[in-house]
Length: 322
Image (cartoon, rainbow, N blue to C red; front, side, top):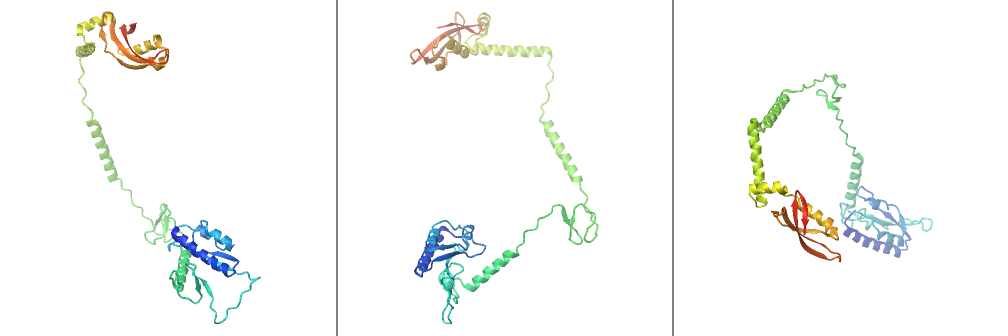
């Protein structure tokens, strides 16, 4: 019903109202809202509740109002409750004026006043606007749901089923428009034709079949290139590489794995502490393919040592490890 700053100002005003009621020996007050569509749920829950002066002051300290009021302030007020059993109402004299509260801000006003001295509204206009607003709300009807299976008759405009052959209101025959499939069929054929051209155009022309002699030449050339690359890795000529392979076997590509397992199985006190730092390239030695591994691992006392071990590999196995 208003921003929190305006609610706090309203709370101060209402505390002054309760203080004035207490000075006039008013024992109980009633919570009253503007009773229109702008009343928030928290304030509406307090409508008609009666409190003592102390209870009303305590109720003002709680949360009772939410932002959203178009006038940007709370419009609730307290009305003094007069107990008729103990204090019967006194008749109003001719020269005596009766007071009431402003319907918007709750400020106390005279009954015959035209304008509120606090918020500035004109009572008659404000009352007419509120009555008109209530009337508009009561006249609002829920929106009519559209029925997807209905259509309008071309002659009388009445609702009829899409499957109906005649209108049930005026009896006119319903002429259904023929479904045109010519353009759709042509478009579908064009899409298939474009897709066929794209798929067949990407295919590379097949290579001509090669003779057995050409295939053997191609395989021999590939083997020679592989042999040359392997010989360059160990700094040997092709002839020397062939002789070394015939004597010691192929140089192992997985020498790191072989050296690592050899360390774990035969040398290390704590295999889990092994850290491989690097390998030297393989070369042809007098006893086979030679290399070295540099590593770190824990000794018997728990300290890390850095060492380098040389190994000799023949036929894919380590035969010497120093």
